[in-house]
Image (cartoon, rainbow, N blue to C red):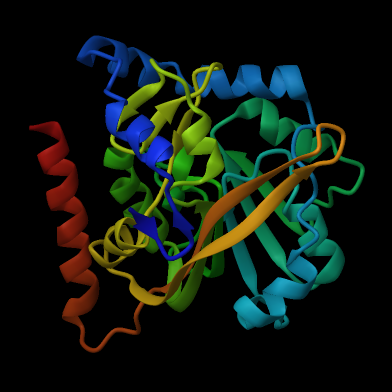
Length: 285
């Protein structure tokens, strides 16, 4: 069992099959209610040193997102953290303007206090994308490109449709969303011990943050069901090498690009606004 990027051993399959949800409904609600606080604590502990700057964008973005390399473009980064994508992007593509939002006030403050921060090129702000409307801070249909780098895995899957609908409203027709995240059967998923599984492919880290592992079909369905067109979805196989411990572990990430379609008639916007309204109404029932 497995997929083309990772075939599970019998032991790995047995481990995943034996893992059961360790949380009751009350515990799940409590974890969700404390998520923002736990991310603030994460950045209090690790400050700006936990994640490396994402310099791969210099080579990858012109190939994956040529739109981001054009003059006068506006990019929205969802889940900006302390700026590990923002600052390399602005270094390589200085003509960009970046809207950058994060769940954590502490993370956003680290972006603002970075010596490379330029308020003329970047607008960072705090936002819970599951409920805070982006239209309150960004003009409707103002964004050319959106990035979600290890964002969606940190959100409960039931809340991801609300995030995608929220982002959809500030994208221009034809705008592209780029996603990179944890793929199904990644080494990190197999490392979780007993008592950490919350739901299928959703786990809780020691610090109370979430980690969801996406299949291609799951990621594709989330976007297509919420109004986007699929451009590409695929697993990425990689290896993490620890030379000190002489360890080499397989990593599985998932990468996708999705597009807000061009309208074919005047009913297009109303159709997806009604979809969004229906979703939120069902959430409240």
